[in-house]
Length: 395
Ligand SMILES: Cc1cc2nc3c(=O)[nH]c(=O)nc-3n(C[C@H](O)[C@H](O)[C@H](O)COP(=O)(O)OP(=O)(O)OC[C@H]3O[C@@H](n4cnc5c(N)ncnc54)[C@H](O)[C@@H]3O)c2cc1C
Image 1 (spheres, rainbow, N blue to C red):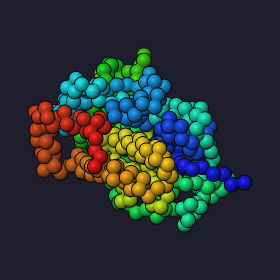
Image 2 (image 1 turned 90 degrees about the vertical axis):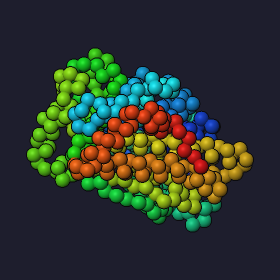
Image 3 (image 1 turned 45 degrees about the horizontal axis):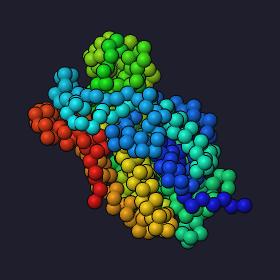
Image 4 (image 1 turned 180 degrees about the vertical axis):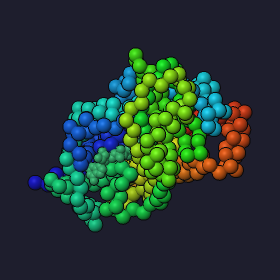
């Protein structure tokens, strides 16, 4: 017998899981398909951390999820930005605004497993693991179905949350802008002698930017590192051999003596940005719709705002008796999300171009820019609100 779900979500990453919880909060039934097995999702070895913005924190608070993760998060109280090793040309302090911390750092493996647990406990969510879409039939949108490796499932709306290399986007033939940065992000965790006191560092070097982010620490003082390096440099055997030594120079004992450095994982960096966010009855959210450079730590937050916006609109339309694949609903989603998405895709793309260059002119421009920013309270406060996800960027 064929299964039927009005709303089918493809992908149980942080965005797909959050979207399912947002729908469940409104008592709307959904089904999530995930190609991996449940067990491997719980065991996953994602050593990255995510900076949850103040805005995303409020979304999680609204659905009652924040209380489940709060004790695992580290508040970001200050951000020090500098060109090279200069000790903080530009400093952001959450005290300048009255909005709480600038953001919160959480380890990906922790937030993913807590989201999954919440989803599995919900009576409004059906979770089908080990399930991959092989074929989508939606010529007639009122008679649409997917064929997975296990079964046929009919749906009204298919929400693609299957990440940067989304196959659903490919099936739907949705066009996108792509650019390969020819850079890799090296991610690892460190422990150090002194407390970080909730300080995040962003240091810009000619090879690329390095972020050192404060992680929840009990007895051991911990931070996590995202170091972007040009592939030309990172591919060299010599770089890999000297990575830890080179990092020590750049870290420069900011939080005191370095106690340990974990294994490193490298992520190739690129950007995908879709021109349309839906086609017929398939709609994209999160990295499936736009996957951006991690320079500003905003990809997850942008995807979370997609999930929140789509869930709000579906809820409003449902109250009017309209179906979730209504063309006006999907148009509303596109128009509400386009400004925020385009601004962030553009901003991260250009920031990376400016801050990952050894060009002397660009270096001078960066130094002058940081000085101008540091002297202007207005610029500093506005950029903090933007990064905190507290600017309403809807049209
Ligand atoms: C180095 C690095 C650091 C980052 N740091 C930050 C940060 O600090 N703050 C921030 O906001 N963002 C950050 N990001 C971005 C953030 O990690 C992503 O935006 C976010 O994880 C995207 O989540 P997602 O759920 O959309 O996609 P994914 O996490 O890619 O999840 C997709 C899910 O879909 C499943 N799937 C895929 N294909 C199929 C299929 N065919 N059928 C069924 N299931 C499928 C996958 O198994 C997976 O579970 C960073 C990114 C990188 C690379």
